[in-house]
Amino acid sequence: AQSVSQHNHHVILSEAASLELGCNYSYGGTVNLFWYVQYPGQHLQLLLKYFSGDPLVKGIKGFEAEFIKSKFSFNLRKPSVQWSDTAEYFCAVAQGTYKYIFGTGTRLKVLA
Amino acid sequence: NAGVMQNPRHLVRRRGQEARLRCSPMKGHSHVYWYRQLPEEGLKFMVYLQKENIIDESGMPKERFSAEFPKEGPSILRIQQVVRGDSAAYFCASSSDRLRTDTQYFGPGTRLTVL
Image (cartoon, rainbow over all chains, first blue to last red; front, side):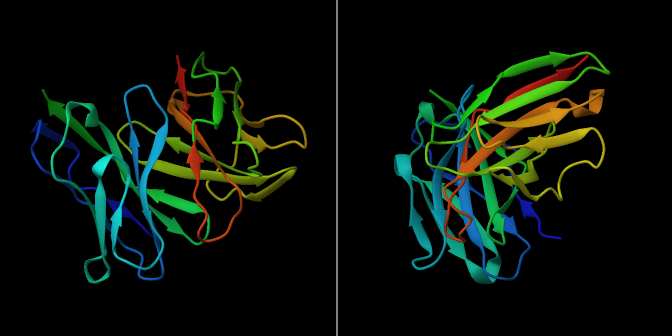
């Protein structure tokens, strides 16, 4: 069965530090990949997505992710985090056309 | 994507009661998906519906759970005779189509607590 692994469950950073959150998936076929963010008390919001093409994907709020097919990875990065980036981040893989498989999430806390 | 509405946001039920969760998709979206997030776990797919049709309910528990998306009105996820293990966050998502390149937009979730 497909699975998505997010190895970092809790991350604490100081403002201006660089961020990289890991995401690995198990499916070997064609995949759609997503990163969602959930700010405290809010809904899941799409940060970025990869369907095809350039494996380096730019998202909102300065986030980017790189799809490395050989490593089955789709890591999320941001060069300089802000306090407002405190949230929970979810990586997801689309199985077929609609069945998303989510990782367990990474809770990021940014210290001011 | 704030257009996906879910209510209530928080729901408390006692064991044996029924829980009804509602989801209104984004305007123009006719595809609705329900996911469940148990504590310390990722979101798990439950069911995919189009208007008046259940397309895929492979993630739904076989008993006590049902879902509908009527011609008029919101999609409803219904849990009968709730048990403590049903306590979770239930998320609804919608999309405009089921194409491979379509994106699901999520609502804020309903947090169900079973006492």
